Amino acid sequence: MRLTMACCFLLVSFLFVGCRSDDEQSSTAAEEASQESSQTAALVVEPATANADEDSATDTAASAVTDTTLLNTNLKNNDAAYIPAQCYTKTTADNGEVHNPCFACHTNSDVPNYINDLDFQMVADFRPTTVTNKWSNLFKDRTDEVAAMSDTAIQAWVRKSNYFADDGGLLLANKLAEVPANWDFNGDGQWDGYVPDLYFNFDDQGFDKTPNGDDSGWRAFAYTPFLGTFWPTNGSTDDVLIRLPAAMREDNDGHYSRTVYQLNLAIVEAVVTKSDVVIAVTDESLYDVDLNANGRIDQADKIVYAWQPSAGRFMSYVGRAKALQVAGELHMAGGLYPEGTEFIHTVRYIDVSNEGEISLAPRMKELRYSRKHSWNTYGQLNNAALTEIREGDQWPERLRNIKGNPEIGVVNGQGWLYQGFIEDQQGELRPQSYEESVNCVGCHSGIGVTADSSFAFPRKLAHDQFQGGWFHWSQKGLTGIPEPQWRDGTWEYTEYLRQNRSGNEFRNNSEVTSRFFTGSGELNAEAIEQLHSDIATLILPSAERAWQLNKAYKVIVDEQSFIYGRDAHIEPLDNVWQEAPAGEVTGVVEPVVRAW
Image 1 (cartoon, rainbow, N blue to C red):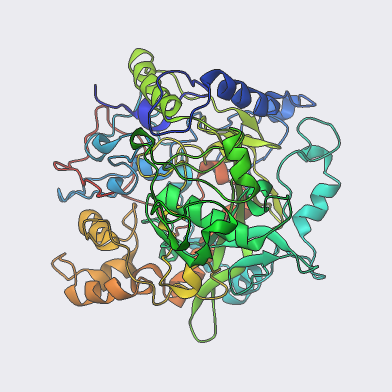
Image 2: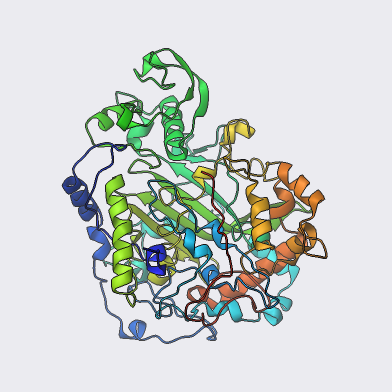
C-alpha cells in the first residue's frame, strides 16, 4: 500500500499498541501507554476564559496587524498548519525542468523511524482539505516595506538582544515569573511551560555556565545545517543545545558529575547515530560498564555502538542513570533518546561584522524548546505509522488533531513536546499561539529523515572537529567545516544542488544559483570542489543579501502575520502552488535513496 499525505503528516496521536521488537528494552505496553497518558493530561486543559472576540477573529494576511491570541486552541487560518509551506513548491518548472528538493525530508527512513515516505519525491498527493495553500505570505510583495527600512534601523534591531536584559538577566524568564494574564492559558496564576534557564555562557567544552559558575546542564554542539531552508543564505542563523535529565548527570550517589554527564552524552550520541563515538581514555572499572564492547572491563577510548538485543548485546548508561535503566525507569534503544532529553533551538536574524563576516545575531526570531516526555517502543512507533496508513486510506478528508495549548506546548504523538516563543510587534519574545506552535509538529513527527523526531543532533560534528564538535557558533563559526557525506560517500549538499538545481525549495536564491551553476545550468565544478572542504562557500549569504532578508522578516514581525507564513523573501514567490492540482505528480522519476 502506497503511503499517502496522511501518512506523511498526520501521525495519529497516542495510539501505542502492538508488536515488540527484539532490539528494544522490554517494558509493558500498558505501563508505557499509562505514562504517555498521565504526562500529557495537562495538554487538554480548557482555557480559563472563552473570549468571543478571540474565537471569531477573521483577520487576514492583508490586515495591518494580525490578532494573535493565546487563550484558545483555535486554528484561525490553516487547519493543516503542520504541513510546511515548502511542501507546496512546484517541482516542475515552466520549461519542464524537474527539481527535487523533496528528498531532503521525504526518504527511506531508518528504523525506528517507520515513516518511509520515499514516494513523496514522486507524488504530492494532497488531500481535498489541503490542496489550497494557506501560506499566503509567500505571495506578498514586500518591496516597498523593505525599501522604506534603513540599513541603520535594521542593524540596530538585530543587534539588540531580546533574550538578555541590560543587567544580564533573562528577559523572558523574568516576565514568566509573573505571567501576564493573557498568557496564562489555564488561569492558575503561574507559567506551566518551559522557563528559559540557558545563559549562553560557554566554556571550552561547550557547557553552559550559570551566573554563579555552575553547569546549567545545557551543552552546545555544532552540526551541519539541514538542507535548504536552514542554511543562513535563506534567511536565518540558528543554534541547538541539548540537556539530558538530571539522573544522567549524576554519579551513583546522586551528585552532579561532569565526567559522568560527558560519558552519558557520548553514549546517547552513539545510540542515536548508531555509530562509535570517540571519548577521552576512561577506566571502565569506575562505572562497571563495558563502554568499548570488547567483553572486558578495561580502558576505553570510544563508545562502541553495540545495541543488538537479538544477539544478546546490550549497552548501558553510567552513574545513577545505570541503576534507573536496570530498574526500567530509564530506557535505551538504538536510534532513540532517553526520556527527559531536552533541546533548545534558537532561530535568529543574521548579523554581519564590519569585515563582512556572517554570525548569529543577538536578536532571536524564535526560541524553540522540546522535551521527550515519554518513552515509546519500536512496536508502538511502528504501530502508529501503520495506523496512519489505514486511517489515511479510510478517512482521507480528516486532518490531524494536535494535542496541546499555548502555555504547555504541543505534542507530536511520538513522545515529544514542542514549545516556542516568537517576537511580538515590539520585538520581545512571547509564547507562540496554538496555531503557530502546530507549525512545528509536521516536520518533527511525520517525515522519513528524522531520528527520533530530531534533525540537528544526528548531524553533530565528529570528534576530529573543534572541541570534538561540542561548541557554540559564538565560539567558532561555520567557515572551514567540511561538507557532510552519507555512508556511501555521497556529498550531501552537492546532491541537493544536483537534484534541486537551486539553493532552496522555492528556487529564489540567485546568489547560490550564480555561484554554483554555469550559464547552461550545470554544476560549477570549481565551486563544488571548494564546497567539499568548506560549507560556508554555499550556505552563507553576502552581507547585502543578509540585510535584505533581515528586513523582509521584520515586515512579518510588524504584521504579526506568522500564521500566514514566516519565510523571509522580498518579491512574491513564483514556484509555489496557490492551489495544488488534484493528483499532482512532481515529475521525479527516480527517487533519491539515502544511504544511512
